[in-house]
Image 1 (tube, rainbow over the protein chains, first blue to last red):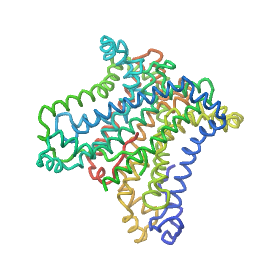
Image 2: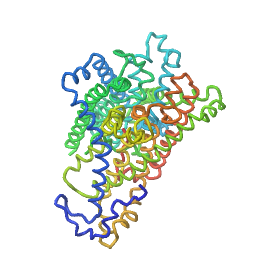
Image 3: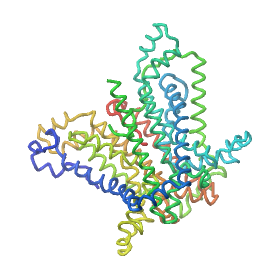
Image 4: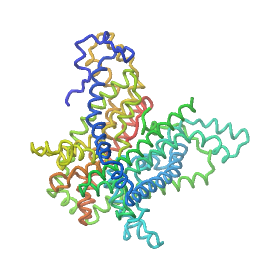
Amino acid sequence: MVSLAPDAPLTGAAPLTRRSLFRRRSAVPGFGLTLGITLLVLSLIVLIPLSSVAIKAAGMGWPDFAAAAFSTRALDAYRLSFGAALIGAGINGVFGALTAWALVRYRFPGRTLLNGLVDLPFALPTAVAGIALATLYAPNGLFGSALAKAGIKSAYSPLGVVIALTFVGLPFVVRTVEPVLRDLSTDVEEASATLGAGRLQTIARVVAPALIPAWLTGFALAFARGVGEYGSVIFIAGNMPFKTEIAPLLITMQLEQFDYASASAIAVVMLGVSFLLLFLINAIQAWSRRHEG
Amino acid sequence: MAGLTLPPRAAAAAAPPAVGQDPPWVRALVLTAVVGFIGLFLFAPLAMVFVGALSKGVGPVLHALAQPDSLSAIGLTLLVAAIAVPVNAVFGVCAAWAVAKHSFPGKAFLITLIDLPFSVSPVVAGLIFVLIFGLQGWFGSWLSDHDVKIIFAAPGIILATIFVTFPFVARELIPLMQAQGVDEEEAAATLGATGLQTFWRVTTPNIRWGLFYGVLLCNARAMGEFGAVSVVSGHIRGQTDTMPLHVEILYNEYDFVGAFSVAALLCLLAVVTLALKALVEALEPQFLESGAPRHGV
């Protein structure tokens, strides 16, 4: 682990004459070794371990799998995880776009600080965010007590899950929309205004269409992150089965009872949705690249 | 391109301001909404951690951090990061070298596979290692016969951490090295440099900020990981508790000052990470333009 020299063993051989059926010949050495290490580590750390869940679930047989993966408790957990992630991504879709707009178009005091804070959910451990949010929104907390006076239960209710997932998903829409907005020349907006379009018309017809692929990518990323999130949610959720129990928590519950098969069945459903989202995000990005030309 | 990737981030010195496009009342409205939103969802939790820790003064914080269980949690977290981060750094450099400096079929698919851990729930990331190394797992009986503990011990925590932080360095370096191309390496090879010399003298100076950036984000996640580590740790106090797990234990025991004290330490780590990140972006604006670095998910 000390050597950072991925191409060391090849240096004795003449790299320029190395041939391969699979690639354009390159003068840059070290292809075989670095690709070999990449594939080996990828297989050992990611691919083979991930296959264990599918193998475990496949060994259950369909009736047992369906009973575990689609029990009422599991369905309630998916509904909460997916529903809260969707609402959280929606909140971030609105405020993330506004934040990106403010960061790119406005100069105001504290802009650098605001810009730095946006990345906080990437850097702050989820458990830390979890206890902080739970304390703020608890019935005796700063925000929780105010909401309770208004008759709204925030912590220990599905709303608490939404709050936590809004926190973890916050940077995604901002950071996907921001660069596209920055590259978007104000010339087109001026042209649109010169041609007689009102400000709202320009935003709706000129600016918004250019931002939509990036916005959709950010939305999907925030949603995907929210679906699998665990650490920041469990403190604020209350974790009542059928009510405020998220799907990842249900997996840990099954594990605590040593019911590995049921845990794997739920994990397979969640992995399936994750891969579907990954595919969707790839498709959005390919589509946006085609449209950018 | 790969799946959960993000386009380039804000450059510190951005395009010239186009102020005056929005009427002042729109500007005021947007800024109020944004500052309110960020204040409510980001600043308030951050402040809450320090308020919670310091609610009874500095003394209890130091006392909580000096507890043997806290010290052992800090030690384990440092150990886990000290192994997981270099492993992923070496892997990231290898992967970026193979992917960015060479062309071969299936490259896009390989990048997607490297990104895969970002789309897996942390709890599932822990579960897969329990299924392999746990008592009922593939190697469970062999491991217990030979008295080797992986699950509910440090090796399992390290494995799960390597899994969740797997893509960080690779996905910073791949776009950076792709943008830089192979001209310099080819010139070095033509002039007779060995592969090692080319890597150290030509490539390393070009990628050092990208590598630093990737290692920074990888380290923050490695020290802060909760879900995956929680599944494989077994929560043995003073033995298999990392700092985030210790925060949970203290919080569940209603030791709020203790929980927020350990949390504040993790918060400082996050703030230092963000500050260093901003510093790299301010000092090396060309690094941002050249390489399209990505954010962790």
